[in-house]
Length: 64
Image (cartoon, rainbow, N blue to C red; front, side, top):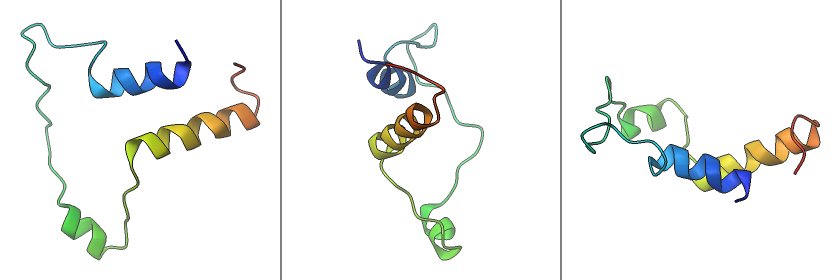
């Protein structure tokens, strides 16, 4: 399996789950509206992971 998909599955919770199969409860919440008012824009998870993997490949940290 391609490492990009492994990272994606881990972040989506498909490879590691709680003992009772319930999702982890976040300890805090951030309002998207409040962060946008500060000038912070979100990008999709897939795009973020792809850019991270591409950057690591360019810098020679990973080879695949």
